[in-house]
Structure formats: C-alpha cells, structure tokens
Length: 395
Ligand code: DWN
Image (cartoon, rainbow, N blue to C red):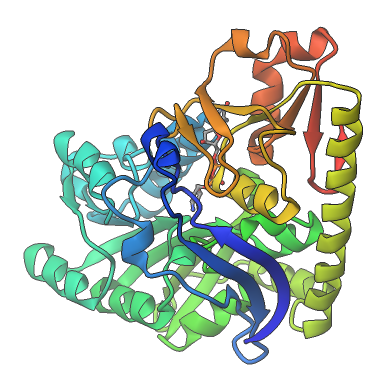
C-alpha cells in the first residue's frame, strides 16, 4: 500500500458521546486516517485499521431503515432476487436492522450481524440471526446447521472487514455450486469523481473499484457476471458474482463496460490518487472559506444528518460548534448525543428546529434529493444548503 492521502487525526466515526461523557471529559480514541493504493491488488484502503470489536459492538447506532431511499432500494432488489434467482436459502452478511430481509419469507433467510443491538431486532422478528462476525468458523457453523446457501447478499459491509481473504474464503465455503453472491458498496470511481473524501473513515477500510473486486474474487475462482450502478450512498456498485465453473450464467456486457470506464479514469495508476489528494486539499480550503464567510455575516448554520462521513469532514476541516451550532438527525441512538471529535450536539430532528436557521450543512449529502423534498418550506423561505460535494458551494 502506498499512501496518497492524509486526513489527519480522527476520532472513531459512529462513537457519539453522551452528555455524561462530555461532562466527564471522556478521552476519545483517535487514529491517524491515511489512505493508500496497492498497485498489485488495485485496492484502496485506509492504512491504520481499528479492530472490528472496537467499531461493531453492542451499541452500533447506524440503522439502514432510517432512510426511505435505502428501504426502497432494498425492496426493489428483493423483488429482483425472487424473480431472477428464486433462491431456496439466502444469507445476508451485515443485516443491520433487517431492512432487506423483511422483504423475504422468514424461513428462507439467515442473518449475520455482529452488532448485538441490531441482531436482536431481526431475531425478535423471527429471522434466524447469528450475532457474530463473518469468518470461516461462522461459515462452518451455518453450513452444519443449514447446508449450503444459494444466494449471499452483503451491502455496505464487506468494505468494513479488513481481512478480505477470510471474507471470500468463508463465502466460497458456504456458497452452493450454482450459487450467487451479490455485493454492494460505495464506488471508488464516484468517490474520486465527487471528491468524496469523507467516504474514508475507520469503518470504511476499503472503498472498492471493480478492478479491486475482480482481483480478489479471482483468487477464489469466483467471477463477475454483472454490475449495476446505484445512486445509493453517493454512488455505489452492485456486483453480481458466480462461481467461474458455472457456465449456465452469461456474463453481461456491463462488466466489460465498467472495467473500461475505470481504466479510462486511470484507476489502476497511482498518479490518479495523488491528483485526488490535491483535489481534497483544495476542497478543504474552499469549504472552510464558505463557513468563514457565512459565519462572518452572523448567520446561523446547522448540520443535517450526523453521518459517519461528516465526522471525517468536520475533523479534517476543523469545524466546531462555534461555526456549526448543532446537527439534526432522525436516528434515535444518535440524538441527544455529541459528534465524535468536534462535540457538536445532535438534536432529534424536528421541523421547527429549522425555523431560525439560515444555512444547513448537508452531512447526509448522499440523501440530498430525499432531504430537499422534505425541506421544501425551508427552501421556500430562502434557507440555503452548504455542501462539499462535488465542490464546496452554497445551494
Ligand atoms: O457504511 C456505512 C453506511 C452504510 O452507513 C456505515 N459505515 C455507517 C453509515 O454511514 P453514514 O453515517 O455516513 O450513513 P448515511 O446513510 O449517509 O447516514 C445518514 C444519516 O442521516 C443518518 O444518521 C440518518 C440521517 N438522516 C436524517 O436525519 N434525515 C437521513 C435522512 C435521509 C433524513 O431525511
């Protein structure tokens, strides 16, 4: 791995602080957020990894069901899975609060979710749930209880696991011969194009490209047969994978097309990443200038969506509560808490909290359309948004 980006010292994203922890001056854990590119594997990864147990514990706050965009995307995919693949047994790695599996017959789904506070949700709804980390021991346990599975799905999870060899070895072990693996994660190409450097934080150990995925799955005799571009999470890719030995499934032209696009963008070259670094540094200067200008006019700025991504932005750009007064968020486990590192307060979302606000920083920029639709009144009254994607600007 050759380093191309340094985003400074960062607190652990998703470790929101309680009032008591702030009062007692709780010492937060910081790590050095550096990002590198591996010329051999074409993987882009953070360099200093935080152990999974410190990140995905019994109080993980992110709930995928909090966004209409995500629940609709999962619903659409579920219909497609039933229509096209009609699997007998589905395994979801990283099932969060069950927003995908709720679309399936309970008897046909196995959930894997190491965060116990989330695993309990699917368990209580009657889904077979393993509250464990995905690895070969768990794959063996599941296989001995249920036999092989014929569809494995994993969204926004594999990018969170450091040991990709263990991930794919375990998948390889449990997937039936004509089984399908569907993965979706943020797209590195979109991240580069949008200068979305906030896709990098302790949980996002990797931001995948098709080039990187292809390299790792080939080692396990797995093969891509289709890719779909998604709008979710600021631009994601859904990878459809089969065993190389399964010749019944034709390889879609989309795979070649996407590879061509990535190569045209020179994603296989280090230079592309060092140029990205320059864009990130420029973005920081521009965002700080916007906040400075607005604040000098004594305007009230708040944040919308206390995302893990905004932890990277605020800490990298050193934006604190003197500038951004508070966040609003709909996630119960985040509200009435404080943002990691910057200690900006998170209010439970209520429309009236926007009444005297002049500017809103879009922490959840990936849900811009959903938020703009919801906040028509704020916009009509002349309220403005600040975003750093793709370039810092006021909307
Ligand atoms: O990979 C990950 C993704 C899937 O989710 C995790 N590592 C952590 C998390 O990342 P994030 O926090 O950057 O995710 P989101 O989905 O961009 O978070 C959106 C936040 O905004 C949530 O806290 C909910 C909030 N929100 C809101 O308050 N009102 C979102 C919408 C759409 C809204 O209308």
